[in-house]
Length: 547
Ligand code: AMP
Ligand code: MG
Image 1 (tube, helix red, strand yellow):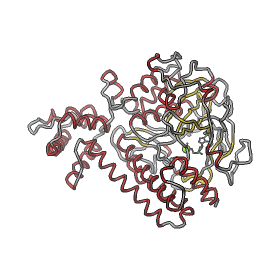
Image 2 (cartoon, rainbow, N blue to C red):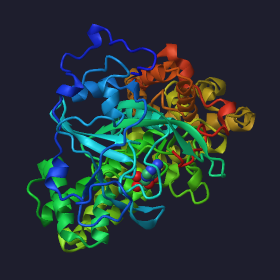
Image 3 (cartoon, rainbow, N blue to C red):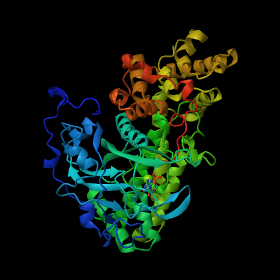
């Protein structure tokens, strides 16, 4: 919960007894200990070879201040909520102080960007502080994003603006509560320094407030960490990195061997498929699915110009840089994840010795995705199991209707649970629960209404054949169809307020998004479709990569 306005501790009842002061937490760094680092110790931009990472200290900032704090993540890590926004937590997560046990580093990785091999990228503005063991026994890496230049910054400044940091902080938590595999965020820190960005890439660079997010995940290793080692022909290090990831994060697979590498890759395929299916379920568009933004653990990682589908439109992408090609639009995501996995497989061939087993393992992606998406469709539509051509046609026709006239995906599915199913229900009553999802009057024209009602009749008839208990059906649908998502314009409202020093908007949103499937009638306004003023406002509909 944010601290910008309220710095008091949460009421005693909400305090987790298991937390200790940040300065008492023990940190280690198993990745840095297990793998070779870059012998050069400064942050000058360079090509790094034969190292998994470069040691680099965060660059101190003028006036670090905790702007928001995620209590649930603090509890998970056993770190107590800061008593003051200007205390030791601000110093550490602002990059001004490194605690004992932390050995900050930036990771070396490469990647395919928009389908093309981009060579060395690396943590250009992310710096890992260290790892700690969480309350659940898991290992968690704490990483600052926006903490200053690293050897991988190339010509950029290593910093991040407040707007993009707020978006990463809020969305990673929102995704967690939606049940989507994701990295988490512990703290949002204002730096007290300006960062210059050309938001529209039109030559009008302007200063904006800077910020840092402390994000948290078992590891931030990406597909690209392996790709760079394969591309630059460092097979020994490739093997060491794979062995580290398997023994530390996939221990259940057993000791590394060619068979285990294949099983590991298969598991990555499975997890990636599940992650993308979850994105599709909640209407999330990542926006930049480059292979350097694909987590080796199958977590949603690197929140940049992401967005949420409002009007259902498979071709939609929030990323203005991708407006032409639409490579990373909503509907392409499943296929792009597969393409990315193929690139990872290519990088792992040296470990397995043969590409055939990896090609076979890749099938796990399609199988998992198809199975999970089908299951989710059943839940979303409130049909026990989507099976056979008739069901496929029903579902596809439903999506087509949503696309024909601009229809909010989230509100449509939430409303669908309330559509009367009786054979004698009249058209108006059937369409009524969906009205809130329509963006334009076109949807209310008799022709569209009657097509919608016709589809709803087919739909209701199909649901009746299941004979499911109505309450159980609605409850199942509501668990798959969130009422509250981090709509693009809501994130922007939170940013606008925070830029003026008002944390109440982010505070309220974060609280509501902790229970996205609950009705919360008192927060109904936050479930509304995007207002017209937000249709073309930057940040509300389209986002640049400038962050
Ligand atoms: P992204 O598109 O955010 O995944 O970033 C692609 C690459 O650019 C990564 O290597 C980032 O670390 C790097 N990068 C992005 N923004 C900055 C920045 N402001 N300073 C340094 N490196 C950056
Ligand atoms: Mg990235």
